[in-house]
Image (cartoon, rainbow, N blue to C red; front, side, top):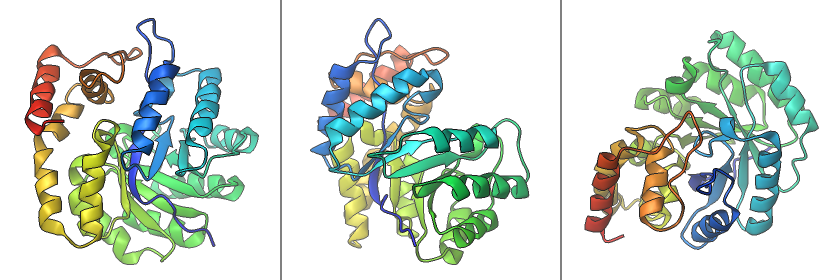
Amino acid sequence: MAHNIFKGLGIAFITPFTLEGKVDYKSLRRLLDYQLTNGADFLCILATTGEAPCLTKEEKEELTLFIKGVVGGRIPILKYCGGNNTAAVVDEIKTTDWTGIDGILSICPYYNKPSQDGLYQHFKAIAEVSPLPIVLYNVPGRTGINMKAETTVKLAKDFSNIVAIKEASGSLEQVDEIIKNKPDNFDVISGDDALTFSMIASGAAGVISVIGNALPKEFSRMIRLEFNGEYEPARKIHHMFTELYSLLFVDGNPAGCKALLNDMGMIENVLRLPLVPTTITTKQKMAEILKELRI
């Protein structure tokens, strides 16, 4: 039976671009080294925050090879593979070389809004062909459909290679329901930075974080303190980031995160359309918060 290895601080890893709009491998190397030395427990690559919808198949393959080479097995890598055409996702899983990848993150089908049975059948088809452990991804704000707790638990019980869910419904009640009824080999992972403190206190195993791209050491410390039962110092770190949580997403993701990293001198502030950089006002507010935090 597979067990979840994606615990602690996971990074919803960005894709840096040059001013000309090409993948910036020099900055990518810098970001990977930064994560590996500042507390990241695993990476989640080529998903929403990585601007995967705006990357070509060739770019995704090159990025995967580069990231695997730099990481060198030091921390697990979770790679995105999902969509709203079940047959196409199944085919992609079958034809992809998964060497050096430790798990697959797969989103609930978006736009076509399937029923709960449709969601179950979609992930059943994926689980039956996947050579790797699967992390489900429930994010109703992006997909237009919420996978209910009972559907998640049924999938977890029926398929031993479905080992976790990235839960971004925003409902702590739903999180509690999953944690209460899940099998032992299955974990809940926070998909929302602002709710991570509360979710870990409720029994979540970690987070796939956007803010962790810029502030992995601080966010990792909060998580480790909670794991050790030290909730008061963890809460203080959580409250340090309260305003940043909202600013990061006010102009879309990963616009806020890239603006932060740009202020830190790590990357160019470049996104691919239809995404655009965060507003000057938002960027200035985040820069002021960073200065106050002395980061």
